[in-house]
Length: 157
Image: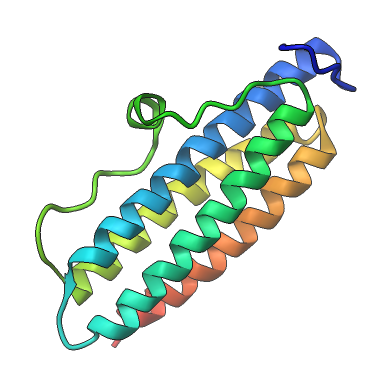
């Protein structure tokens, strides 16, 4: 803790801090993966997929800020440094070079799925420790699931 008095007992703050830190890392990496895909998508659906990826980037960045500020509010220093993200993210690396629109959507769906799975675990972990942080995680997971649904529909024949 770095001078901020937390309303949570230390044991709960530790659980919630770990959940928020994990969420922060996954959201930062999701924004980076989506931006990498955004720059490299090619194919007949280029424009629609390109724009959809920017929506995911904006969503991930918005939620990352909310999660980081919640961590700070409970006395946990958020760590969004590149080295931390690279070491602890649960998202696969984006493909290198140009990526077809279908493969891009597939990579986005996989990335969202990985984050959603981990977020659902964090929702469970924070239920008793801090319903306020849990509520933040529930809201952002709902948004991620919405984008996952839309991306999956993009590749469904």
